[in-house]
Length: 60
Image (cartoon, rainbow, N blue to C red; front, side):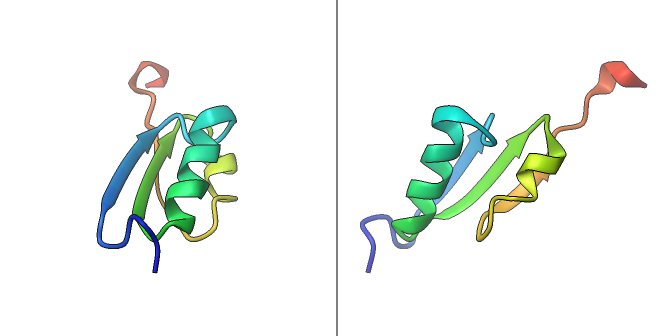
């Protein structure tokens, strides 16, 4: 049983650095993590984490 069981976490910029570390740590503690980032390919590598690709409206 993790410290964050039953909690929901939403993270942006979650594919590298502290955002990625936080997403993994929160998931390992039992939270339901939803992550988003502009880099959709790296988002796919976040196992056990619900991901939402960032849509860049300026690219048309």
